[in-house]
Image (tube, rainbow, N blue to C red; front, side, top):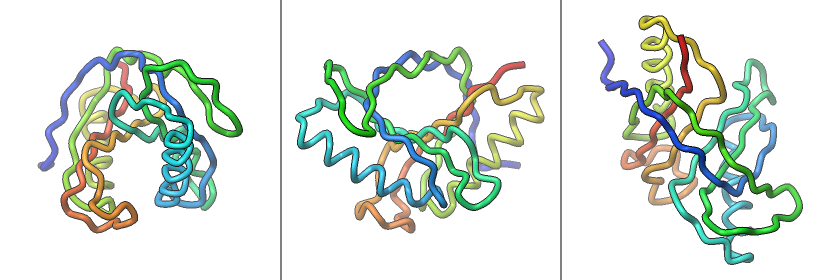
Length: 157
């Protein structure tokens, strides 16, 4: 029996500013977050929602983690360099759960969602999203038990 409650919900389209790269490990996305936050501060980009990471492809071997870090925005901005502005599409059905605790244990939430999806006859239809509802007190602290993340799987029958 899982400790995670799975809920289904629709997610609206969202305008985001983002930075995307292929990384050796998902933990290295903190480098992308630092770059994107610095960019937003320097360019007075107004944030309009909860930051999230999109796992475009899950690593099956080292170096295969295609991750995009995104911050919702409500202003027009012409990005530069690797920074992009785009609209994340609306998703009709997301299977979601909340993970409270260290990033090192977030895999438990992913396992619970995967098991639920399989048990209920669904399949994942697109990239997985991870929303940062409450970040660690120290950004690089992977052991902060106060961190809260919502994991979202787009699903279909």
